[in-house]
Amino acid sequence: MHELSIVCSIVELASQAAEGRSVRRVTIEIGTLSGVEPEAVAFCFPEVARGTPVEDATLDIREIDAKARCEVCGAEFPTPDMLSACPCGSRQFQRLRGEELNIKSIEVEEAA
Image 1: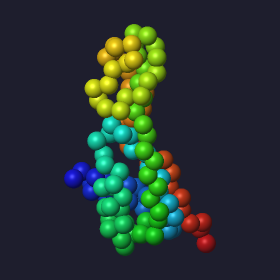
Image 2 (image 1 turned 180 degrees about the vertical axis):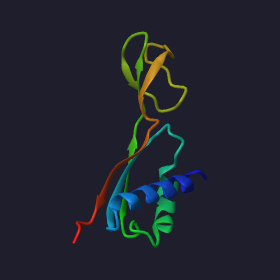
Image 3 (image 1 turned 60 degrees about the vertical axis):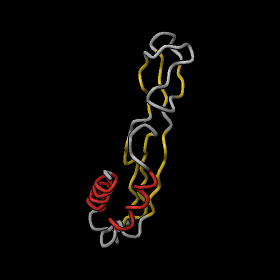
């Protein structure tokens, strides 16, 4: 379950960014073809965050649908799995999105 180590990294980065303040919200993006299970990330987050500045934060997970551009016809099309083909039948394409795992934002309490 690599999601646990991913969550550990997210909590560590958010804690560092907070510079001693409490974190209110962490927003992450997970591509549908990234190999990361959003449910597992959400499950691990509260336990990993316990005792850190991220403990009371809300985790906002945004799933990013996969999309590619065909190198033959130029069409952009959804790729719900790794074996998808362009509507024209070509399997020559460039993935535009769907494999990412990003921390999009970290919202912290204002300094007192």
